[in-house]
Image 1 (cartoon, rainbow, N blue to C red):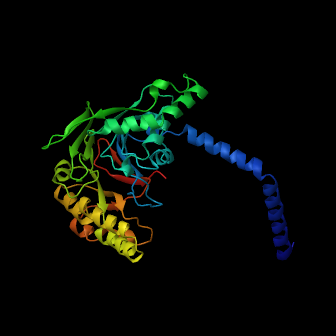
Image 2: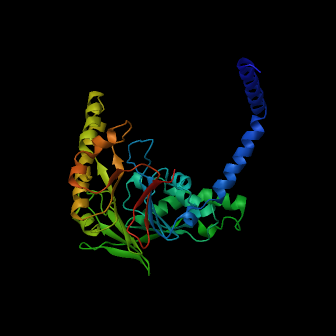
Image 3: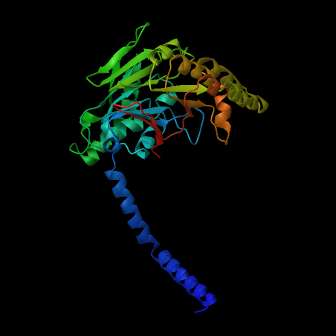
Length: 358
């Protein structure tokens, strides 16, 4: 067989194969879909993770639209216990993409009640209820005012609750498991308040400065000697530095005034003076990357992860511009977070493993 005839033969086989694949594309796609469905429904990230403290970004963004960073949400796994901190838009869907079963969420914690930190709560509560047929509502911890937030979402979803119980039945979706149970707490002015404490795990909250938003809090989580602090939304805070002393990981919000200023200039040029005013206003109650780096340096933090990124960073190279001089201030590892980032702190180790869940 000549080379020409050989290639003609191979081409004919490819055409026949392609034609058959096209002809049977529907059953082939359904077979693939079945395998994907089986894999995803059988997956549970809690069963895959080694013992330790694990932190993931289920929402690394701000109120400004960002395709790579949805509303504020951080997932924390301590051993086999699953917790969620803030529930911005996309929280439930990103948690699913990360491989977590919503029904296994033990508790939810809110840092404050700005819309971008709570606007995914309704969907998350619904998924947590129906995905495993939970018979008890999820505890939802937050500063005073959390009762109103929970009551509002419960009222908004009340008719949906009725429909689902009527359709699926009490055995599948017990009405007793609907929604959340508010757990308000007060934070002392000079220290943290412990919310959960047992042999291996401690979760505490501390006040931060996000005026005029008050109260606003951050959280510290320790598990078997590993530790993380979540700053919440705040201007540069001595409380964050105090609580972050020596922690393995600091997850800190950050806003670039220079970049936000560019948006303000664009708004002014477009005659959108309201947006210009908003861009000017938000600068004074957030932390710059350089200020967060100062906190990480002075607290001797081992790793600094930025979240609640403002403004969006849609172009290559913008993350470096966003950091400004932060890397020159803090000489430890720094990451500008995106949705799906996942950091593991194995128990009995000093190791910090950085990866992604999607």
